[in-house]
Amino acid sequence: MAGPTSTAGRAQWSSKAAFILAATGSAVGLGNLWRFPTEAGNNGGGAFVMLYVLCVVLIALPLLLAESLIGRHGQKSTIGSAVQLARQSRASPAWSLMAVIGLIANTAILTFYCVVAGWVVYFIGVSGADLVGAASAGEPLRGAFAERSTDQIREIMPTLFADPALLVGLQLAFVATTVWIVARGVKGGIEKAATWLMPAFFLLLIGITVYAALTGDFAAAATFLFTPDFERALNPAVLSSALGQAFFSLSLGGGAMIAYGAYASRDTNLGQTSGVIAFADTGVAIIAGLAIFPIVFSVGLSPDAGPTLMFQTLPAAFHVMPGGALVGLAFFVLAFFAALTSSVSLLEISVGWITEKFGASRVMASVGVGVLVFLVGLLSALSFNLLADQRPIPFVPGFENANWFDAIDGVTGRLLLPLSGLITAVFIGWVADRKLVDAETGLSGAGLAAWRFLIAWLCPLAVTAILVLGLFPQIL
Ligand code: PFF
Image 1 (cartoon, rainbow, N blue to C red):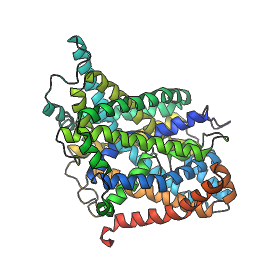
Image 2: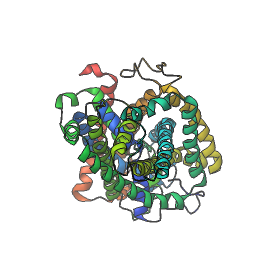
Image 3: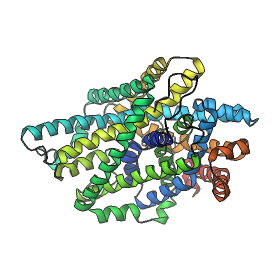
Image 4: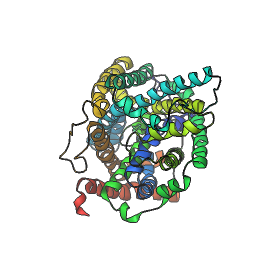
C-alpha cells in the first residue's frame, strides 16, 4: 500500500488487521502464484519445497520481524528508518546499506514483475472475451475456451510472446496502474480493496485447488511436491533458489516490510503479525502449487516448463471445469489485484525515500520511477522475442544461459535480497541497541530468546553459507 502524502502527523494503518492485510497483500502476489510453482518445477519439487519451508521458518520469519521493527521504530522511509535506528544505537549510518541494496533490488524486481503482471492482464482480456462469447451463446456457465483444443490453449502464451508490441503495451498498462495508485497515496482505497480482495482471492484459490485435486493427477502432484529428496537438497543451486524464493515471497530484503512497518501503530505486536503474514504467504504458495501441479501432470506438461507454467496449466483446468469461463476470468482478475498490492509496495520503497530525501511530490517521484521501471522492464519484456538470444551475465555461475528476464530475477532474488537480509540480521542481532530492539518485537521469554538466536546466529551463518555456495557451487 502506498503511504499517506504528508509526513506531518504521520499516518497509520487504521487497525492492526489493516496492517496485516496490507503486509500480506505485499507478500502474496505473483511470487506465490507464478514464481513458486516455476521454481519448484525447475528445482525438482520435493527438495525445493522442503528447503523453502525451512528457509521461511528459520530465516525469513525472523527477518520479517527485524524489518518491520526497523520501520515501526523509525517511522520513516526504508533508508531513513535504518539510519535512525543506527544513530540511536550509536552505530554508523552506513548500516543503512541494507536498505540501499534493498531499494535497488526491489526497483529492479518491479521491472520484470510488471512484465509478468502484463501477462495476467492479457489473460483477463482473453478470458473476458471468452466469457462474453459463452454468454452470447447462452451458456455463461460452460468451461473456458470451448472453441479451442487443449493444444491451442497451450499456444496462447507462445502467441503472446510472438507479439512484442502487445507485450510492451501490457507491461506499460500495469506500470501505469501501479504508478497511479502510489502517486495518489491512497491509503483508504487500497486498504479497503485489500480487505475484500485478499479474502476473496483465498477462497477462489482454494476452490480451484479442490477442483484441480479432484480432476487432475493429485497423487503425482503431491508426490512431486512433498517427497523430500535429501540428495538434491544439497545441490547449491536448489538451496540458493529456495532461499531467494523465501525472500521474494515474503517481500524481504530491505524494503517493503520496513516501509509498511513504518505505518504500524505502537500497539501492534510485530512478533505476532510477522507469524500471521509468513503463515498466510506460505499457505498460499503451497495451495497454488497444489492447484497447478495436478494439471501439469494430467495434461502432460513438464514441471520445468519455466515462467509460463502457471499460464499454460490453469487455463487448461478452466477449459474442462464447469463454469470455467467465469472462474477463469475471476481468477485472473483476483491475481491482478494480488499482483497490484505487491507492485505498489515495491514502488513505495523508492517513492517513500525520494519524497523524504528530496522533498519531491509523490506524483513526481512515482512517475519518475515508473518511467525508469518501464524502460528497464523492456529488457525483460523483450527477453522472449527480440532479445531472446542475449546472455547478459554469462560470467556469473548459474547464469551462463540466462536471458535478461532470468538474469534480473535471479540476481535480485538469489543475490541482492539475501545480501541485504544478511546485513539486516547482523545489524539487528549484534549492532542495534538491544533494549530498543527487544521492546519493538512484542516477544518475551523463550520466544524472544529463540528469535535472538535465529537473527544473531542462524540467519547470518546460513545466509552467508548459501550465498557463497550459490556463487561457488564447486565447493560442495
Ligand atoms: N512478495 C511479492 C510476491 O510474492 O509477489 C513480491 C515482492 C513484493 C517482493 C515486495 C519484494 C517486495 F519488496
